[in-house]
Image (cartoon, rainbow, N blue to C red):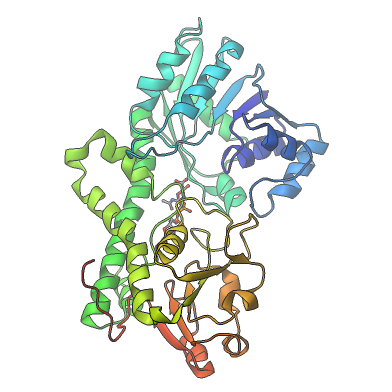
Length: 426
Ligand code: SAJ
């Protein structure tokens, strides 16, 4: 059986590799020629533990090849990005383009699975009208489903296998074919539903997290005003068997949680009031972090701020929608000198240093923005020699407070009482 995967990003590539690893002949297609060349040479253009080894294994076994054009196959998976426009509506141009690209290659009996996260009714209102341009009868000769990816970057290979899958076919046959396809490697449970429900399930999962994180961020701001430690309070509240509070931080990043709620708001704006409010709180959180930094340093002093972390969350190289980028931008706009250190980000970023020591030299405030494991291991006793003012602001609560205080740092943590901080105007 042959598979054609459209889109070789964070989801399409590992998916293509997994199918090849499980014996399918796979062609991975990407419109970006550079991505195709990189992958052909056995190198990755993204960071994901374990993926490069597996990629080379399946290339060597002749099971996976890469191209900028689709080929005839038994099944097609569309895993292209669905970015958000400035007006906060979904940009479905990649989905449309990928669907149009496969049209000439479709044959009777084929299955088309949309994996990209999309607003409700995209399969019915966008995919099907394009697929109707083939001469095949939809649902009888051509089968279609939506099976959203739900894997976590950094744990992709493991979660592709172990996660449960939602399968929303346009009819039962489409769903059954989709289940049979993914069963080649997926060990989780399969739940069959209709396409619109499948689209909504994915959006609801991520919206649940966004709203829950907004609540945690709100509790953090309340803690700073009222005077308690939100981290301890959340931990204690979560001992209740039916309470699962999320954690505050510098804001919500990534291409999923910061984006997906808008896909619901777009379709039902008047009904999505809580979802929109949560988005507002999370979007304003980097500004809150900036305001706290302002209160911690003496601006007249030509202040140097060290930002630890550019990726939107720990131990990955993904900067999409990262709150850190927003915080750096705000600091620069306000004429702070910003030095950045992030061992996971390989690309050039202005102000980014390759060594921690250089990034903290003459620093007036070190801000932990990303919860990279590497930052937990920093020795404050070594660091203090290089800084100008020993102040650290931890927006992830990852530092060993006693250790840093013992080394001579003033430690501030988001969501705990910071004396002398005035949050006026937020
Ligand atoms: N964050 C907090 N507090 C928390 C949890 C997360 O501030 O308690 C922040 C993170 O630092 C990050 C952002 O939220 O900036 C999102 O991180 P995440 O780990 O929650 O989400 P993603 O975007 O890496 O992955 C999510 C996952 N969805 C769910 O857990 C419901 C993943 O399973 C999905 O596959 C992915 O979105 C997606 O593609 O939709």
